[in-house]
Amino acid sequence: MKTAAALALAGSLVLTTAATADVLWDQSALSGTTSSVPNTISGGPPFGSTVYAVSDVVVPAGGWTITSISTFFSRLGFADWSTDVTTARLNIFSRTGSLPAGGDNPGAGTVVSIFCTPSTFDAGPGFGEQGVWVATASGLNITLAPGDYWIGLTPVAPGGFDLEYNWPSSAVVGLPSAMRSPFSGFGMPPANTWSDSTVEGSILIQGVPAPSAAAALGLAGLAACRRRR
Image 1 (cartoon, rainbow, N blue to C red):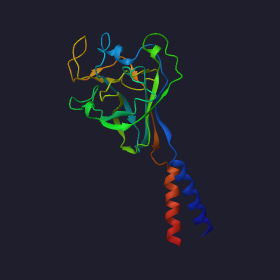
Image 2: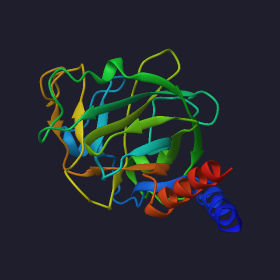
Image 3: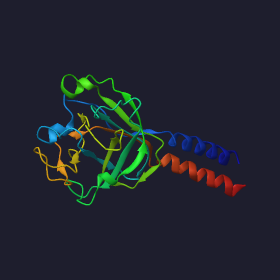
Image 4: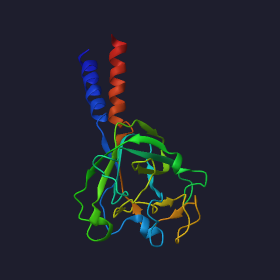
């Protein structure tokens, strides 16, 4: 009985630890003096246009439960990030090639609540003079099976239009990010087509990884305790 009780206690402790949010994917080390959109599209998009970005993310064996996603931005029209920007479009697409599929429409992404805080990153000249902000969607409960994905979070400006100036990350761990805009012209690709970025987009994902072997042992201990009772 004591052994079973000890196993049950160990299982409870392991399960409590597993429920704590971990850093699952970290590309929050920023670099560069311009955002990834002008690096991708000649001269950058015209003011007021929408540009979505998605970063490649690899979910390892066992899968994830995502509880929060953060990305970094340097400009969003004339919006006050601290009070005006409260929602974003969250996009998660399966990655089967070097770009998202043509039917992956980021404009139809799920609208989620976000909060924005100023980043301590020293952006330098250019767009950085307007400050680098962190946009975070928390309270998520997204389960992803193992595999490759495109994941992006695009803030929604006051008035309802989406506009992304996503800051590049120095932590290149996969393919560069991909971009798509409903706008064409000014050196941009045809409307509503995906294009390669020259940099990896910034993103930080937190949540719960797959249960470890220790957690599985704890569950077995709980089961044994119940059987003996």
